Amino acid sequence: MGKLFYNSEKTATPLFNNWSFSKINYLLFFAGILFIIIGYIVMSSGETYSFQSLSIAPIMLFIGYIILIPASLIYRKG
Image 1: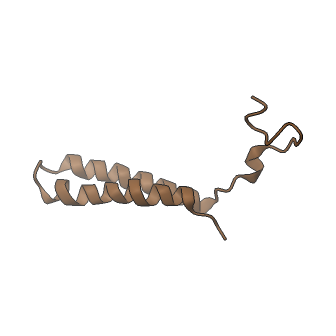
Image 2: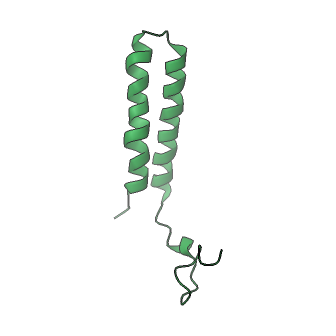
Image 3: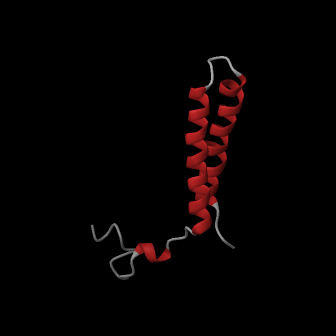
């Protein structure tokens, strides 16, 4: 397990000291999770062929899965 958490055997600095995620990354990630959860709730609460189930919920799921979660992984503070 030692090789997993260290850069190499020569340097003993833990890999998580250089962790590049900031507060904004975590906020984007949790906003994505929140959009996904609310999207599924909206989808399940509407009727089968309602506007809510066919339009609003898929847009919320798209925003969560395709925009917010990848943005939280890609974003780096300059």
